[in-house]
Image (cartoon, rainbow, N blue to C red; front, side, top):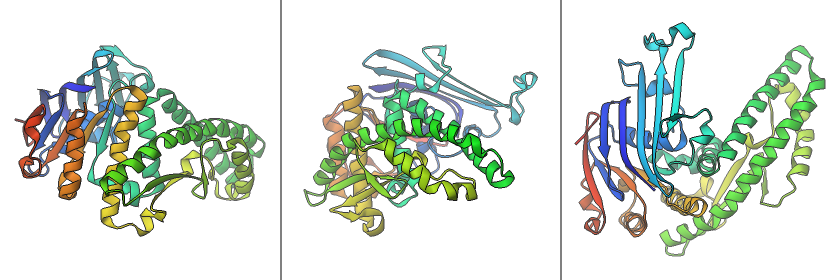
Amino acid sequence: MYLEKLELNNYRNYESLNRNFSAQINVLKGANAQGKTNLLEAIYYLAIGRAYRLIREDQLIKWGHDRFSISGQVRNKVGLINLEVFFQDNQQGGQLLASRGKKVQKEIKVNGLKIRRMADFLGNLTAVLFAPENLNIIKGAPLERRKLLDHDISQVSPDYYLKLQQYNKVLKQRNHLLRQIAELRQGLEELEIWDLQLKTVGISIVQKRLEVLEKLTPLTRLMQRKLTGGRENLEFKYLFNRKWEIKKGYDLEDLFTQEIKRVKKEELMRGQTLWGPHRDDFLLTVNGINLKSFGSQGQHRTAVLAIKLAELEFFKGESGEYPLLLLDDVLSELDQERREHLLNIIQSKVIQCFITTTEDIDLFWKNKNKCNFASFEVEAGVLK
């Protein structure tokens, strides 16, 4: 799988871009704040169907405009696929939507056909993004770890994405009812209906996460051992409601039922759902030691790299193709040994890779001439 061509219009600091890329290595070199990261984020948008960071989509529009578009030609095992995303914000002065009473419009297309469900867009392009903020996978809140797994699963399982959407809708309704009970002392008789709905879809989400974790963990462990010369074992453990470690095959029906009973009194007081996959977490350990609490900065970086390399193999196993690998200014963060290991893996496999850097890549990669290689200069939203 690879991205043959990318087109941007009024996206971030890009007024217009239309470029073809190498099927293997693409280096984007430039000073800071020139648009290198924006380019990677646009590619990743085509993979997951939304902005990577938790920002509003109107913030992706180039200043002074009211819309942006991203389109790409992707060649995968099915053939050549055209992906398009269009977003317009009527609040910035556009008149097209005013008569319809709409503030924004977002359209996604596959081969020119408008897609109604995001689940039908996902999977046409898959990508793994490795950026400096990925250290939050180790150091950050549980949301960062859940997001890692949810993004991966959604790219290879559109049904999982639909389950997440369904879960969030039911969760919103249940929380609304809990607040109503806490404030107005009414609606308690409806709670069991929402309990059952949330539990049913919640169990299916946790089951899928556990299935994927069972596949991803051995890959992560293997990559960590390769990166550390066999000295470290990295383990991924699933923590139900951030407390109990569970694995595939666990009796989730009983676990959910017991947890619903345990937290019911507190929920009624706080007006908030206190169980379900939106509260779960993942514990990462190195040689049995909690990585978040006791790991060094170097161990954090190595673990994130191991996870990203494991993601490549996971996607290959699920879809039959390697995803795109997007490396955002991470080579300078790695020592020479880990840089060489990463670049050698890229070079040895059929992986299209986009690398951003402020330095000359020749400083840390001596074998670039042995692969299909393209280099671009990025300056003020222009690719040269």
